[in-house]
Image (cartoon, one colour):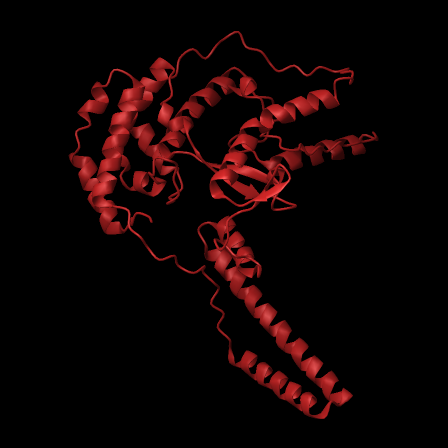
Length: 371
């Protein structure tokens, strides 16, 4: 069951949102009521224009491999050699058949490799194209054919409700349990060097209000997807109707910034367990993937721009941080490391590197530390 977001339906949605005056959203006394009124209006419009319908699931997309004349000839040669060997059982015929098969298989691999490379290069989302290709090659993939199984108290359970509840309990407690285990493991460790972060005498006491232009630009920066959070509003709809939805969103965001409150409805996310490694029945072998509301992403992006501006102006971001910063990445981190190693070696110094891989690094962050 899903909504059909055809071009025609998206254009109708745009017209419907254009005719909405959003007066109740603007007049609401607080961000909670303002957002709830906005969400109700958007959902009612979606139900009217794009009602949920039962649709037949499409089979997974497979690469269309077109065999050329050379491949057809090589296949015929191999089948002929195979038939001859099956009739005679002669060792020379076996060797000839094996050589024909190797030539045919090599041609097929090269042809498929070329088509796969072309498919990935032409894809807008190259990461998705790569994973689609990998998943299509997994012969044992049986998506949706059976309920997920999980080990609970020594028993294997496949009841979807019980499995979901078990994952929920595990994911909600993973940060606390990871931090506690770390404390126990290193409680007798003597810390000889304390890392201190730069301090500032100023405080971020005020978030600058947003405007229609900034909201539309932020919406444009989102990827156009049909996946969505619990509010069932995909980014594809928001991007298509950006100009029509921007005015009420400006009102909601500014109420949030001025009051320091975040709409309660946006604090709920869809959580999917993503298998990482090892046994499929062990909850610790999964990591949570959160699908948050598109509208939450918009508010967070605008708030983030103000926080980063404040931190950069007050030099609160260490020069050694390469993650989650514009213009920096793992590539710049590796480049910086290699430059330091090279410089020290050229100076005749000895160089050592300690590379750490933190288990469940993000999951183990204490909420009281980052909020």
